[in-house]
Image 1 (spheres, rainbow, N blue to C red):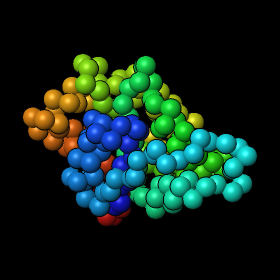
Image 2: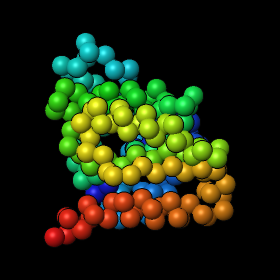
Image 3: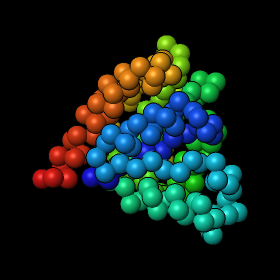
Image 4: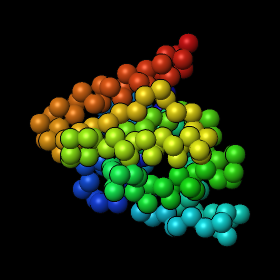
Length: 172
């Protein structure tokens, strides 16, 4: 089962990007999508003929059996960069790359709440885009410390466990 890991921070050395890298490295047949900074702002005028960067992201999502979206929490929600990518992936309306795609929402922050508000917003947006949301979301508190002390492995295990029913269904 192929898994695409999509991260929502623009910062090169972001904690969510590092978490995404850890997930992509640990999950079987998983790979990390390129940073979303190359996508243009969503524009309905471009919808009929999307830019190459958009087509490439749509193709990656379409080719994956499942998508793990990792977001930081900015002002209690997802960053505009990630929202923009989801806007592009939601088009064409009712037939976008996310429609029916199994998606796991993950939020992480250095604080004690672990992006709990952002993961609610992320699940809402993904659901509106037609994604097949996996049962639970994952929140990762003190992500900076967990990445340093190795306890991020427990998060990787939790994500793998949530993806396991899809893996089992694929094998059957």
